[in-house]
Image: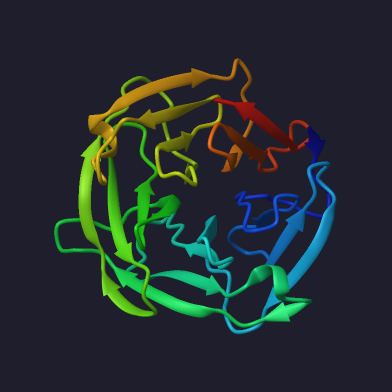
Amino acid sequence: VGSIDSDLDEASAAQICGNPNIVWTIEDAGNKNNVYGMDFKGNIVRDIDIKNIKNVDWEDLTSDKEGNLYIGDFGNNSRKRKNFFIYKIENINNVEDETIAKTIQFTLPDNVKSEDFESFFLLNNQFYIFTKETKNFKVIKVPNNIGTHVATLVTEYNLKGKNNKITSAAISEDNATVVLLNHDKLWKLTNFKDDHFFEGDIEKIEFNHNSQKEGICFIDNNTVVITDEDSGKEDNNIYTLKL
């Protein structure tokens, strides 16, 4: 539906928060401490500087029903990080050019080694965060409370097959559907109870198209937005998909 503005080197996430006409995104490690709002043609219509935090490795976005946006600073390619952060931007649609964020910090439980995380969503005031692994991946949770926490291990799972690294995740507004994104497919999870996401129905949806897809969010309970991160090979696009 659109081609992402070339001023964004790496669109690492996608999230709709209150305003259905704006898709929020971020750039990951080494880029500015800014959150960008795009229209569905990929034009940057909002540019907000987060004054009090540093972009160590921002990877994903999620939001709550009160219009607050959350940045997941938990990328960990070296697998050496010990401290991870989620930043809360309050009332994002009322911010003009700059703001400050509140900080949720977490460490990993003793039974989870330092991992690379790239995706999360918010459910029942808990953040569910996914490791990026080809085979067995882990899901941890962290409470949505400002302060410092030790994450809790929720589950481990294997989606089977090759090249199954999860690059972004989202949950529908009715909390009935979870989607997990990969470069050439997604997994749709339904009919689960509580946070037993992999004990319900799991459907793999192939795109028949391979690009560096790094962001996903819901427009409505049955439709998602997907964004490309720069791969250097082709235009970076915004897509919509009816589930």
